[in-house]
Image 1 (tube, rainbow, N blue to C red):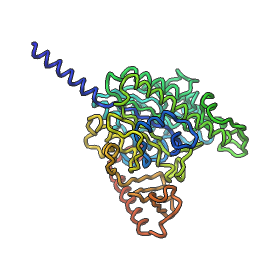
Image 2: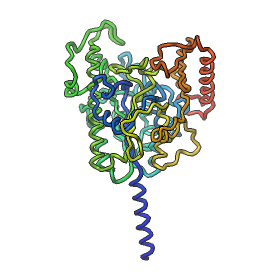
Image 3: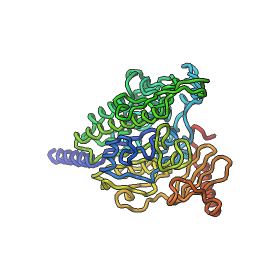
Image 4: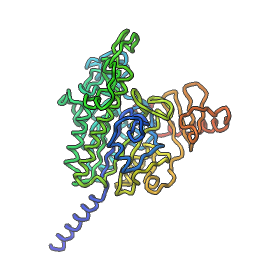
Length: 479
């Protein structure tokens, strides 16, 4: 009896020691933040807490997402698979609100934005971490389906509070008039009127109070800041909503609004001036940064900050008031400004250098295999992952295992192989750039180096053939 009890006690202690040694994960994703929009880069934006993550961790300068806009980018980062492989290679959204139309409830219920979602066979990071004993939660933007079978509770997350589609009004929590906030599997309007960044902060802090120091956790906080506000009112829609206290941190804008004779769905409308939009964008980022700071401090109070993997990046290139300097283009484009994003990684106990800059070629596809490796978790059996384990590259400055990356957005195509970048827009001739000497993609080399351009197009075509041959996934593939 004594021997049996001692054995059980020893097993319990070993199990808890093992759990305590496993790192926590805090994954923070902003929405439409520009490549240059970090305070440490000197453009005037105020981000002291993101700067702290960079100072205490490593900034990745050569980091890409899988699509230049919301939905497919999120499918790629959560599954470790190209959007063309996991089935989410375009947006889950409706077009009518872009032209001022507000859906009736019965109409919205059968639209693609309501019924579309990521294939239920796909495995997410949350699935992997949960199966390994982690507590999992998401607070913020989901954007991978709003029917119950597509919601986070069916995708490996223990808890969810946030909105389900591509964007919302920061105060009403509606997307062009449609209520969009959920708690787990149920729509909710319980917090209508409260700025949503504060709500995601509140939920994240509650989760940390519940689990930090008690069990390993995977906490995913995808803010909607600084995405433009999804409102039918042009004066709101044309900018980013931000609390007045954060607007006051930036120089006063003389003229807040202007009248335009031409608008998407109004012959004449009042919209935000470019100066006010820039101020509002920066204020929204600074407000988000303050919320991130509170999460870091709560982890510090719980004495588990240094064994928490903190990762921050933007879901795609910046738009609206963003600064993508020195990159060409912005959100929705195949230029670097649509695909290359700011990324920070902090994990002192994991050997991630402090105050370092890493220029290696890495992408959001690396998240799933890397986090699984850090947690001692198994990657999903029988699933083809497109990402690599990035820890040797970050810890030991080894060359990245990634040498190529491909993107497709309808008729727009792009490929990167080593330092070569190839871009083809619809039926126009492909363009070739050397990113090592021309990060701004200003000089097309396809005329001087036609053989390299042909090789890049062939590499893209080979990749497309691989995607076409992959086991088909919904919702867009025909099978």
